[in-house]
Each structure stands twice: as structure tokens, then as C-alpha cells.
Amino acid sequence: MASAGFFTCMLLALFIGIWPCHAQNVTLSVYYETLCPYCSDFIVKHLVKLFHSRLFSIVNLRLVPWGNAVLQSNGSFLCQHGPEECLLNTIEACTISVYPNEEQHLSFILCLERLASANELNEWINCFNTTGLATVPIDCYKSGYGNVLENQYAAETAQLDPPHKFVPWVLVDGQPLQEDFKNFVTYVCNAYKGEQVPEACHPLPLMNNSLKKATPSYPVCYAN
Image (tube, rainbow, N blue to C red; front, side):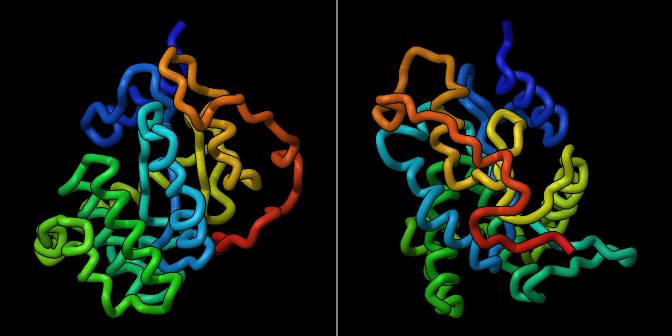
């Protein structure tokens, strides 16, 4: 029987026009916004675990930099943390598009989010040099194609079922982790049905009852 991850990949292929997944891998989707401090914290301190113990080998990572932004009637974007967040959301969207390799674009996003956490965002452009990537995403932004990407992410975020309540909003094979998002490794390991189980899943972490909580156990940026 096909896994939930397989059907998630099929839906993504229909939505974004490419086949983004590897067979048997678990799809990990992160809906976020660049200047939410709790998104930065999750990316820098928790999502970075994908680089550890070969977790990347069993994960199809999808980063969706839109979050709690609003698409206005005139087509412009209204971002929760102001115009700079709209700019950086679009830069990250362009980086994901230009560098579809998950480890490459996550490395850039980790760099930028570390700077956001340290209040050093004026240096974000240096992340291209730090990660060894060219500045093509800036051209993507200037050309207006970044806005096309952000419109796609806005539509995708609006179609989440159930709707997202806050960011970071994390899904494993299409299932929202809600309040337990920082425990994503446990969910990834439990969802993986392949044979090449990475070290991070030995022993297999136990599930907990955090999903039953009515309110987030960690600070988040709520949707308006």
C-alpha cells in the first residue's frame, strides 16, 4: 500500500508542477515567516538536526516562506513583521527555487535566520558567500519572479486543512504536528517505512501526548 508521504508527494507534484520527493522518504513541510523569532529559533536550533545522523537521507524537506502574511486585494503583500519580512520571504523563496537541492537552500536559510536571531540582518547578503551560492536569487527577486513564487506559497498556505493557527506550522506526511512541532524528529522516524533507517532513529523515539494540548507549549507567532 502506498504511504501517506507518497500521496503527499503526488499532491505537491500537481500543485507546484514538479516531482519533489524520493520514494519512501517522509515529507517534512515547514510553513514559516522569516522574521518571526520563533520560526528563526525552530530553524536554527531544531530543523538543523536534519544535518545530523543522516536524517536528510529519509526526508523530503519543503520550506514555505509565507507564514502569516496576507495577500491584499491590489496584489501586494502585507507581512506580519513589516516590509523587510516580505523582502526576505521572497529572497528565501527565490533561493529555494534557484537552488532546489534541499541541503543547499536550507544552508542559506539557516545562515539568514541565524542573523535574524542575532539582530544582524543587515549582513544577510553575505549568506550567499558563506554558503558558496551565487546571488542569482537576488535577480529572481528583482525580476518579479519572486512575487510569483510568493503568490504560489500564499495559495498553498491558504489551502492547508486544517488551517494553520500559528507559525512555525510543521507537517509530517501532510499531518500537522501543531503544538508538538519541535518533536518533529520523532514523527519523521515513526513515519519512515524504508529500510535505510538513520542513526537518529535508533532507538526509535516514543510518541507523546503533546498534540492533545489546547495551546502551544512553545512561543509562536499567531495568525491574525
